[in-house]
Image (cartoon, rainbow, N blue to C red; front, side, top):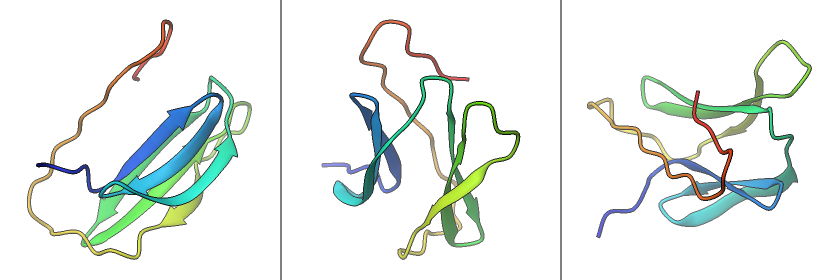
Length: 86
């Protein structure tokens, strides 16, 4: 079975950071217009949020698990109406 190695889990106005099915950070509140991003530079994975009304992305978590530098894929799931991916 495939587990998502790095993810934001958004639920009920809060977010968590999960790695391979394990909660690593959160829950913390978010605004519906916040933007979430996960980056990889080399083997380092970082999680960012661009808060509503603030211009820059804020680093909220640095993964302790190095990631392969091989090609990786992104995926998403929407659960509620008016959810969107930008």
